[in-house]
Length: 223
Image 1 (tube, rainbow, N blue to C red):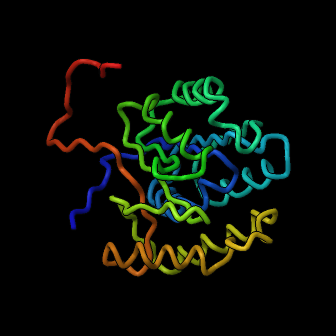
Image 2: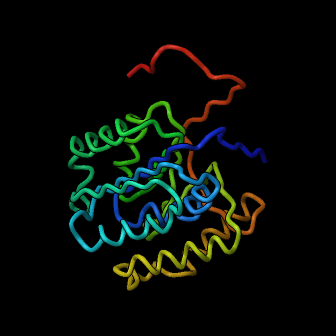
Image 3: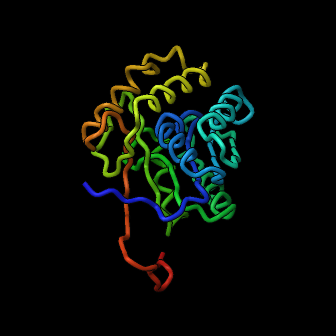
């Protein structure tokens, strides 16, 4: 198995449809990357939950999951379940986020995700962040939509424990959900760890990856 490490990581962009999506899908990865790259700039945008308790939870959680980062969190107020029918507003929000800076890494929902909000957002992201490394995180849920991922970030057991503890600490509104428990998060991480010769891991989907020994130049992408 080949390991690929980015030459630099100065800026990350995080995108989620709902508060807690980013932390559930990539919380361990954020802990690892932010500690490995002190002072990294992180811009996070969530489409729903603005003006509610969910926004307060999200701001506190992402602060905890991005230690030492220069963090900006944007939480919009779209209704849950409405992302697909508010395409123009969602596209504009992602385009505004793109203009905020040039990220070295974009984390967003997986295109395999069956939730209508996640899937619609995953469709938009590559049309805006067209020349960036974009990883699609996965969220285990009732729909049974997990697909085989193509990229893995191994997590040491203490990091996984920290992730799960922070999820329960900061997302109190979700604690009564049957799937929001230690076994759910640890179980998927154990499976993904087996698949990359680690104890635990978070996994991601990559739609396009360019390999080279020097920067590539050429015409702008065609619509």
